[in-house]
Length: 388
Image (cartoon, rainbow, N blue to C red; front, side, top):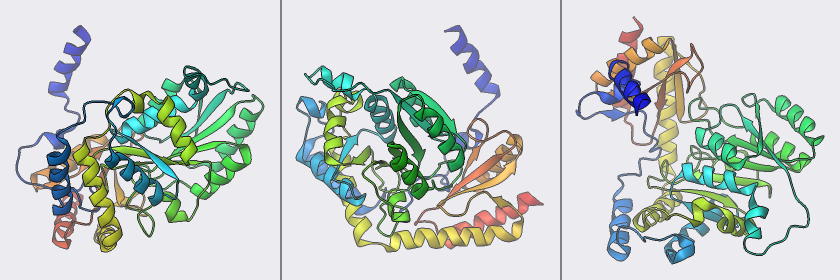
């Protein structure tokens, strides 16, 4: 306990997230991942209430041990179809989807042996991971025990050189990338990733948590954004961002889904999302199809924010997604800006090392369909004062 006490004492004098610790006054959030402003939508609330009335607050068992519901299977079918896959596997959170799939796919044959399967050939795996991938990806790979090689952010030449070197070792490659990178706002070069995966006989695992419901004409994510699909692609997504509920999933071919259900501990040995959340997610998918204007409002707000920031001289590191990191530089200055914004009723995250490189601290503005122009104008006015 001594280390924990020391750390707790240090935190009293070195708050890591000072903006989040301000008082409880109402604020306008520019850090929420509620991209389509669905989390409080009456139809999601009504669907969740109906789910509570029908199923209670939880099903109290894993789906392999009596906790399965037709509701979950219906949701998985809808999620698979959204991302042009034959099926999807539902997890309690997006974090657990990454950890649960990445930790198990390299061990699938060994785990299936527990059920009587005998492999014709033993495979050795190596994971090739973008250096800016989410921590849940890094933890899932670490838990898998596979070799891990990091390639420079979105650098396909570096990735290809690593894949060529790995081919000499006889390992089966798994390429892993975020679709939209949460701290950078950048988009993975999916067509090039698919081409490399198909050429090198690799699986391609894409964390599309920040793209599901946002990118693509129908909200299908990075694959729909590029019009790029492949049998080698496993596309993870989140229910807790653009879809406004709770949960995570991976959309895959049907036979791959069966293997994940059999071998992933994070699926088989824990409960799925509460039934009311599955019901809310189904309502969100209905709205995703019925109200494309929500995505239009999101992108209108995104463009308006960029337009209002342009005269102020601030550098926005990436402008192609709803995540708009405004470069500040020094961590202390970035925290000071976040505190000043919070005092003006604006919540925005100050992102610094280790979530961002040293000297590249940034205010991570996240746009959503519910922001008004008056709210964006208020942000611009405060930022203009801070810049003077």
